[in-house]
Image 1 (cartoon, helix red, strand yellow):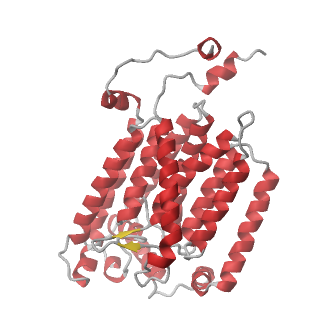
Image 2 (tube, one colour):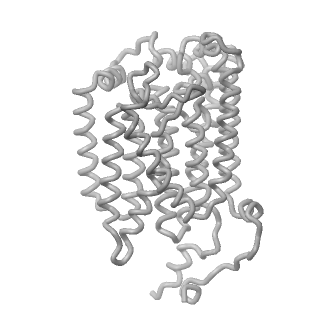
Image 3 (spheres, helix red, strand yellow):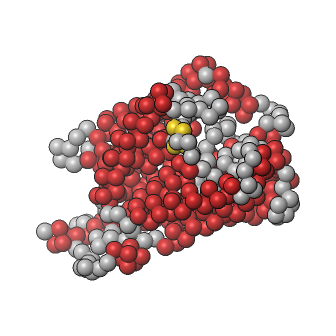
Length: 388
C-alpha cells in the first residue's frame, strides 16, 4: 500500500555494508570533517609544545595523544554512520541513560582538576566528561519523543522532551557548566521549533532562560566574573581573552609565519578553548576563513539533505545534531574574538581533548547516518502528488 501511495526506489538486496555505506554517504561532508581533523593536528603541532615542555613532557606529547583520540573518534564516526536510523535511535537511548547516570554521580566521584567546576571523572591515564557524550544522545531521544507525539494516540512527547531538557540543563548548571547547558537548550529549541511548536511557548522558554541567567549572575561568582569581563570596555592584556585578541590582531591576513606565534607561550588553553587564536596568529585570516567554511559546509549540506527527508524522527534528530555542531563552533570562535563571554567550549575536531573529540565523532557519525541516501522518494515527491 505504501508503494502505491508514495512510490519506491529499487533496493539492491544483499549489498555488502561497506559498499552500500560508501554509495549512500554524503562524501563531501565526510571530506570536510577529515579536513577539520587534519587542521586540528596541524594546529596542535603549533600550539601544544610549550605546554608539554611546561608539564615535563616531550614536545609532541599532546599531538600524539590527539592523534590517538582522533583515530578513536574517526572509528566511532565510521561505525556510527553505517548504522540504520533505528539502530542509531537505540544507541541514543542507551547512551543517554548511561551519560545521565554519569552526570548525576559527578558530585560524588568527579573532579574539577582545579578549574572550579566538577565536570570530569579522573581515569588515571586520562579523564572522561559525561556531558560531552550526553549532547548527541539527548538530541536523538528528544527527537524520538517529539516525532512520536505526532502519532495517533502517541505519547505526550513534547512535554516529556521539555521535562528531559529542563532536567539535563539543571544538572549541568549545578556543576556549573552553563556552556553545555546552553547547547542542550539550543538544540532542543531548534527541534521543538521544527516540530511545530507555537512561537508563544518558545518566547516563554526564552524568558525563563533570561531569568535563569540573571539568577546565575547573582548567585555564581564564577559566572558573574565572566559576564563582567565580557561587558567591560577594556580587555586586560594579561587574561586569556587579552592574549587571544592580541594574537588575532597580530596575525593579519596571512599570519606571522609557521612556528612564529607567541600566544601559545602565554595561553594555558591555547591547544583547547583558544586554538583559533593560534590559527589566526600563525596562519592569518585565510586559515580562519577556511575553518569557518568547513563548518558552514557541513551544517549547510546536512540541512539541504534533511529537507528532502520524509521520516520526521530523522529530520528532527539530524537538524538538532547539525545545529548543535554548528553553534558549538560559533561559540568557540565567538569567545576568541570577544563576541561572546568565555564558556570553556572546544572547537569540534580541531581543539585538543579526549571526550570532546570522540563525542564529536559519535555526533557527526549520527548526522551522517541520518543524511545518507535511502530507498524512499523525497518529501517533495509526496507534496507533488497531492491532489490540487
